Amino acid sequence: MIRALALFSSRCAGAYRHRMSRSATLLAVLGLLALSACSSGSGSPGNDDGAAPSSTSAPSGSAAPSSPFSVPLPPPASCEGVPAVDVSTAAALQRALDDAVPGQVIRLADGRYEGNFVATAKAGAEAPIHLCGSRGAVLDGGKIDGAYTLHLSGAAYWQVTGLTVTGGKKGVMVDGGVGNWLEGLLVTSIGDEAIHLRAGSTDNVVTGNTVRDTGLRRAKFGEGIYIGTAESNWCRISNCQPDRSDRNLVEGNDISGTTAESVDIKEGTSGGVLRGNTFDGSTMEESDSWVDVKGNGWRIEDNSGTAAPEDGFQVHEVVDGWGRDNVFTGNTGRVDAQGYVVDVAGPRAIQESTTVTCDNSAGGAGSGLSNVDCGNS
Image 1 (cartoon, one colour):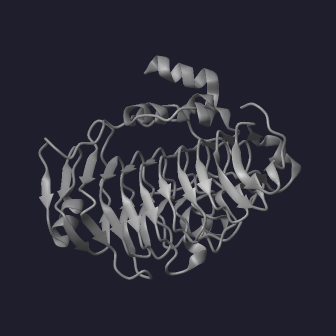
Image 2 (cartoon, helix red, strand yellow):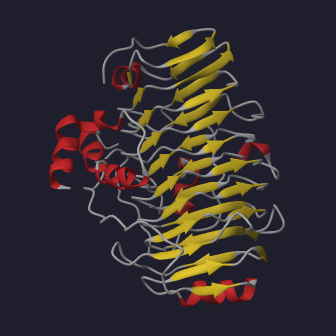
């Protein structure tokens, strides 16, 4: 592990070029230290609502560097062969969430669990809490203008795997969460966005999920995966400071049927990785790109998209000092629209700080690869 960390550090963000197995992905999370070290630290109104957990506060300063990566990695999740709390009703599920302790497995039988479920327990890397089941175990949040279907509120080191999440205003919301792992979920038929990391949620992994049919309540808020908080909502979510939802890994997700961006990366976030995801923009009503990047020091790599509304990827400076030092490499697909594969909007400082490698390629981009010259990462 030490040798691997040294390799990441020496090569900075360039060590992510290949697709990885789950165990290798764990190692890649450790490599986010190098991304954080390499970044300089540092749209439209967001769809955040509610308040952040009272224990969550964001560092001051609009473009301060991210804190060092210090979160240990969790062991691989397993739903079989371990002592578990077996759950088959909605009431029993919420009791199990309330009573969860480090190292526990909460195993859901197939069936429909109607309600809005909240988990707050904090575990650790060596003994995470695992909430698991098959796609036949369905968390149904009900009204699309109601509450969140599954809310990890201040929770740490939860592994949520395999389930179906449907209904509710938002599908899976993580507020102030650290070291959580969301994997293999089907998140579908959601009022607003499907998966949201917010309120200082750091060092989380969102991997191998399928997202479908968002924005049923309001198309403008129908993102697939949403990282951070729009500046217009900082005073409600992060004490009027940037929402430091930093060093999150979003990998291998299949996102379509969204009315807004497949992935929206907000101002205030830094040092994350968006890798190996697939996007379909054919149902987007309230966006003009698959991915909108407004944070700093993100690496956007090996993603593939089809049917972009205008551009494949966009970079914006919504707040001074943000939208900087992002890297786009190895992204492919078909834009089939009048824009760019990568459109870096805003002042020259953003364009000069953005790296677009020449191996990005998406057919049918009427304006070409990018409005910045391509080079090497």
